[in-house]
Image: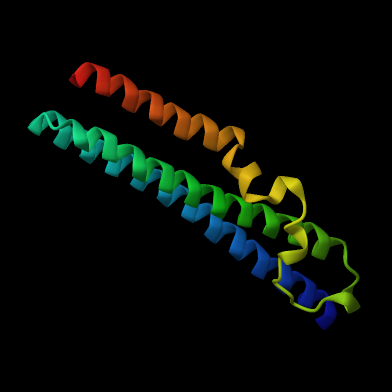
Length: 136
């Protein structure tokens, strides 16, 4: 019975990491909107076009960070699937996700170009572009 709880505990550890990565994704999206809105508000108030250009830099940084956390979340999901299939005596409580790095879906670039991140960040960039035209 103890062995069964070891597998369950290991899966709980992995799930906690997945939840943490998902939380990071959520926070980054919130910060990206907040910072972008603040920079555009400054640009409109001061009619300084430099703020609009500067707003694209954090957008790119947040997109890269978001992609990193999404790729890590995908790796932990792959680890979860493998641990789920292990026999009880094979549980070693490893949280190493390096072996899942080679899966193309788990790469940083695949995460960066995922439908969810492309839709969100390209949409935000288009809104920024539209606001730039309106403010001018």
